[in-house]
Each structure stands twice: as C-alpha cells, then as structure tokens.
Image 1 (tube, one colour):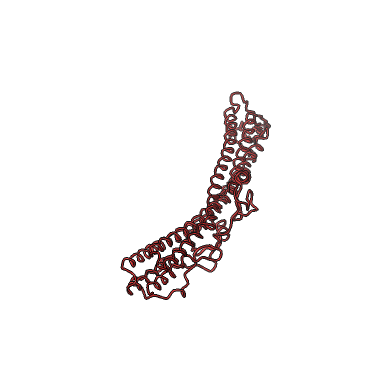
Image 2 (spheres, rainbow, N blue to C red):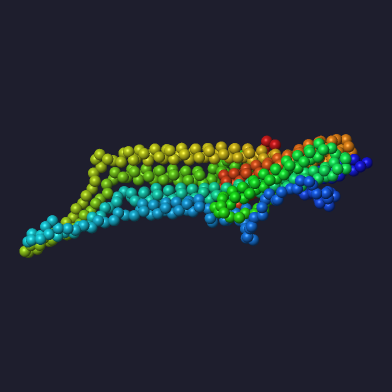
Length: 459
C-alpha cells in the first residue's frame, strides 16, 4: 500500500507536464498546493540564471513601439534619406545654366598707344540639353527614393524578425523553467522515497540526471533570451537600450496566401522593381541627352575696347563661336547609353524573377510551418499529453516503471519545444512575406494582397 501511494505521489508531480491552458497554448505551472512540500534536497539550485534587468516604465514592449523607435533612430534610414537629398541636389544642379565669363585687360598698359578692354562671354545651351539632363537626374531621385523605401522595410523586417525571436526565446525559457521545477521536485521526492526504502539509489540517480539536464537546458535558454534582447536592441538602432519582456501573441492565427497571386502582388508592390524601372527611365533620358550632345552650343562674346590716343579710339566687339561636330559626334557615349538601357531592362526583369523565386521559397516555408503548427495543435500535442496522462495512471497502478514515465515526459517536452519552433518558423515566414509585400502594418491580415483565410490548395 505504501508503494502504491508513493507512485501516486510521483505521478502527481509529473501531472504538471500534461497541464495545458484552456486554449491549448502550452504548459501551465504546477500547482504548488497539489503536491506536499518535500524536505530540502541535498543539492540546492544556484542563483537565478537570468538576472533582472532595470527597465524604465516607458521601456518598449510591443512590436509597434519597437518599430517606431527604429524608424526614428536607425542609421540606415538616415543614410538613405541623405542619399535622397543628395540626388535632389544633383537634379537641381543639372538644370542650372552656365555662368557668364567676364574678362578685362590691356595689351599695352601705358604710353600714347595704350589700350583697355572688357569682354563678357556666355554659352547658350541648345537642343534642350539641360532639360534632358535634369530629367535623367530626376529618375535618379526616384531610384534613391525607392531605395529609401527598401531601406525602411529592411529595418522593419529586422525589428520584426528579432522581436519574434525574442518572443519565442521567452516562451522556451518558460517551458524550461517549468520542466526544471518539475524535475527538481521529482528529484527531491525521489530522495525522500529512497530514505523510506521505496526507491533504489539508481532510481534517485536517474531523477538527479533529469534534474541536471533540465537545469542546463534552462540556463542555456536564458542565454538565448539575453542574446535576443541585445539583438533586438541593435535592430532598432539603440544597441545599449535596456529591453525586458516583450509582449506579443505567439499563437494568433495568420492568413494563408495564394502563391501565384502573391508573386504578382510582390512584383507590383515591392520597391525593388520600381527602382529598377526608374533606372531604365534614367538610361533612356541619358540616351536622349547623348543624342543631342553633337548639336553645338553657341558661345557669344561681346566687349568694349578703348585705345588711349588723341583723339581716343573706342571699339565694340562681338564674337560668335560654334563647335563643329566634324570628328566627335558623341558616338561612343550614345552607344554606351543604349547599352545601359538594355542592361537596365534586363536588371528589371532579373529582379522580378528573383522576387518570384524568393516568394516561392518563402511561401513554401511558411505553408510548411503553418501546416506543422496546425498538426501539432490538432493531433501531435493532444496525443503526447494523453500519453503522459495514461503513463501516469499506469505508473500509479504499478504496471509500468518510472523510466516509462520519464520517456513519456521527454516526448511531451520535445513535442512542446518542436511546437514552439514551428511557431517561430511560421512567424519568420510571415515577416518575410510582409517584407516582400512591404506591408506597413504587421502581422498580415486576410485583407492583405493575395491573403486568404482558406487552407492552401494542396491540403
């Protein structure tokens, strides 16, 4: 009878592994009141492995807060904005007219035949060269503006990815902390049972090994949490910022996407093809500018000359100069700019194909994670939890050994961790889809392009 009660005692401890929340989102802490407090173990745990972090009350915790900080402080955005301003300056400069040239002097500075003169020279630009040059420069402005958009979403993607890395790391830490608590209590109870003669020394060593394994996993998980915090701080542009717990729903549903419609939406909305199209337009304007280059500009000179004589001799001078395009008709530059058009068009097409390939790879990973998450929730986790419950019952009846119970617990532990990993893969896929579509709001919703609440077509 005493052995039967002892098995029930250990079975109650293991029950914490099978306890789940009402929405099936993971393990719940073991109720302290449900298990009698054992005597202190011979081996005590060290200090808490995750030191508390001092955070101000205004410390960011949600994803929108981190995004806003990153958009204000990240140096990549400041650099991209400076590039836009530089390109705008070049566009202004391209339309400016050449300055006049003033000159004056004397071929004979003294004596009765001394002379003095002053000239003004102005180059008159013909064939709309300045307008064409500015149009080409304005396409450069468009290109860097699209690159600014690309930089913005690069920053947002980094913040979103690192936010969910930290959220997953926090969840793993919670699971490992629960497992450590259960393993520690099991070890202590095993010691008590060994003292009472109900467990062997080997059984206690097994419980001790499980406790040590749980502790090292918990400590390693805390390292990943701290590293994820520092990574998130760097992604918002403030690497020394203090970050505590982040607040997010790791288990919320996400929409599915139609692959073909998503590929088309990505090509339409992503800034990379738009920047490439702006480069095509720039090359076209540059070609037009190169074609009119042989049309000569007119250089007009007007001046006045005075010869100091008796009587003085005053003269007005006018000169017209035109370059004759006899040998250099800009043939090489015209050929170059036409080749640049072909190259820019090929680059545009290559970018569109690359985006289509990236979208296909991303949606494959995303769908896999979505399906895996659903299977964990609907099939795998319920079976693993039921296995632990059945094994506990059989252990309490003396029909299986405690090693069978440990193995059932290990399977449930790994299943819970695999489930969290599938959630991480799912969210990282959603982050990449939002990056391809360049969505300002996150997470994606069924109202986003190519999104659907229906399962993917191959299910």
